[in-house]
Length: 473
Image 1 (tube, helix red, strand yellow):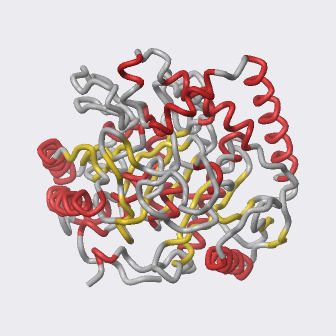
Image 2 (cartoon, one colour; image 1 turned 60 degrees about the horizontal axis):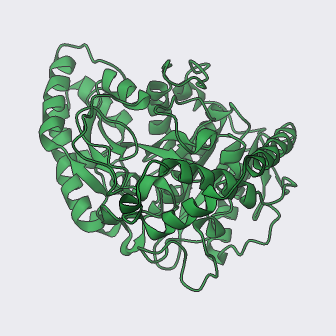
């Protein structure tokens, strides 16, 4: 295990709250340290749309009073948090990366996950960047520009929760709320070397309902699996505004971390059985992580789940959702859109109801196939993405031959279709020092098991990678 960080901005949420309880330091000290990092992170990567220092310090002072009285509001009281700029946050604009959204508001409502964090005493540092309406797997937008990678700002942070991933990696708050409709917490989590979880659909309430329907999830983006378990215990609180929520979680995610890995049935699929060109360094690092699971007593078998690539069905659902997002816009506003978004909206508007229902049929068959697969295997392990971060500002890597972001991220969107929990954690770096991610996928509702296996890999040292260059001594 690594030596514990000494800078307050580098401490985990669990370590911060332990320090508050013991009187080692105060929320005000921690938030000041994080705000300093947030300004540096913004200068380096353009990961924020807003840093609200006054609000953060006010919240930190209120938290400090509660800790002094021995009455914290909840398990993340005083912990600095950032929020992706697709998620409603009371009192500040949610601009969604679009010049078509008016900043004036009013902004009077918290999304369910934000409301639960606020009730628990979390301190909100700012809003993080997203591509326009979260439509693609990299983070650049007409409104806020390009977000760079903490390990090399000329490379992409991934997306669509790229701002959140960069902020966490650079110490601008240990917790961030992201969204994931096709890999949008896992892709940037992999590229930026952090942990991210797309929970089972409905486990974290979502409001307003996403135009991308039941593909869209809210999830924690953190420094490790233990912080994600802590965050899940807060944001999974029930909220009547989401009619598809699953209700209270069955048991404690934090307590589940201590469960054994020994005996877990793990399927390792290097390419899902498809013709995916996985970079050799990625393949080797992921295989090493799987070997670690085997060394911890998991029963590992290299086997593919026997599914076909559902990309066309995903496109039908995703592009239709995008068309719905912009349906209300007039021609003048449409001219302001990201050109790539405008293209997929035009394609989505051409699909018929029968096309949409055929995609739903494909989705249901895929879900059944994965349900059958998980009757034999507890976990499926794959690369998170088959490559490391490429040039910032591009939807696809130069020379790849891909036309859309789904071409280079085939391991993520299938599990939005199936609504399964899926997490990424770092498992190494390539020759350029860019992070590599390994993806752990569980059966629906097996969120605690995914967190347990990820935590075991952290405890075994699998996720120990160098800090971003800006944070190295």
